[in-house]
Image (tube, rainbow, N blue to C red; front, side, top):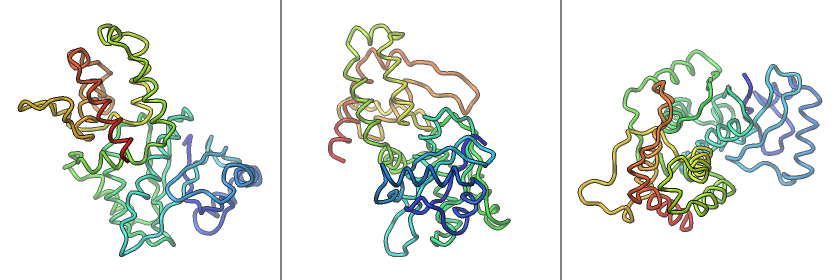
Length: 279
């Protein structure tokens, strides 16, 4: 695989379990890069739910993405942090230009996350987003494999509003900034010229975020709803409807020109901006 995801600890300097195996197999070069990260960007360690990439040392991969999973709690819902590990790893792999990525079941070892619950969460994350990556889940045992097979095989994958918001919560601040800067460069004349460079740049930022979700393409602007009244989840669905991302059905990309020209795209972006400013 191009990318191996390491269930790291915040020190980034190795440890037990899978983390220790990856460091031993990666060799001194991998450890040295992690030491450099600790000496520069992550003096206090890598925060839970965040990611960072190094080269892979002696491992049969191009990169290792290190992410710190949350410790399971029976009294506090930390599922957004676990989802962030997967979402941000996928975003970073996409930025690196990777075509394939292998995940372990993050936090299900000594951090105590129940495997069946992890499997359901990971299934929802992967069925919410449409990353152009070959994604492989590598499990520790046959029982773990069965739990993931059951979760991934669930036929009802309708994306809920809460799952869309979970994706938005995992989008780093720099991607929001780039997105809104690209949106501000789009003029009314650009919206009349669908193939304009400014609109193309905007949609590349939307895909990078990722704010084109794997959803049912239902049009939220029904029953007399006004574009300015969209919820943020409806805005994301509308953006996906405008720029129909058909990768998972074997198709290509095509722009819904009517929804660009009728003001729906600016309204959806305004909804995203209002949500981000409040979040």
